[in-house]
Length: 252
Image 1: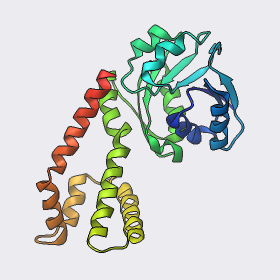
Image 2 (image 1 turned 90 degrees about the horizontal axis):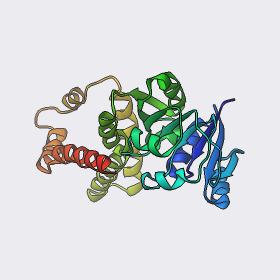
Image 3 (image 1 turned 30 degrees about the vertical axis):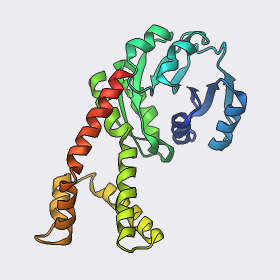
């Protein structure tokens, strides 16, 4: 079984490791052995644990999961030349990673929270020599999409990387609306979850506009609710959310 090495032991690293643990041996590098033990406990399998100071990356396949601002700091504590670094750092360029970390190649990857249930939508770009390997590796946690350049992955970060938060807001708001009209909270939550589950399947093969038209009959309930969403500028707000998140990714 191939070994994959995580540098960083936060929520994103744990989510990805949950998706990879059946296919790869997991190795995790961090600052605090107690927190590394907590990572192992949460993952539910035995892993190799190492402290960051003096860790040798030589020949290893690394998934870099630290905060973007910490790249320069950790570079002073690592040794050796990695075979490949898969970076999940939002807005952190390949050039910056290569400037601070010794590696043969870099692939930027942007998974999302659904990695923990192997349903991530992960976008990739970087050294094309590792394209197939990257798709195979990150394909273990869901769907992948190789993009042409770093600008595109910064835009994709705003869509797929941040997207679960946007959908969570919509899910909570729709359930709250049903409760406001008199539906019990447990019923509203169960119905909302069923809605998102079914919609997730439909959107794979049907354009959003066609799904909307298929539900919206003239003068019906959907038309009334849809009109309220348009009056609330929900469409514009979603478009602006992508713009703002993309701009932030570029600034990081």
